[in-house]
Amino acid sequence: MIDRNNPTMIETPAFAWSPEYLAAQEVEVVASLPCYLEENVNAQRGDGVFEKSIAALRKLNARPRAHS
Image (cartoon, rainbow, N blue to C red):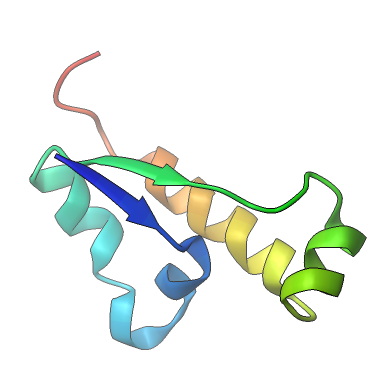
């Protein structure tokens, strides 16, 4: 299963559980940003979105994978 994910949602209290759940279910997560530059991402999606997205991606990547 693949989850097309908005990584900033993981940084909200309502979805803080999702990295652990997605890893336990062996879900492949696909997340994207409109650009790799912080200033461009924040200009398009709002102040702080780039930083929140990177924090969320780090949480997702920190979860153990069932298969490598």
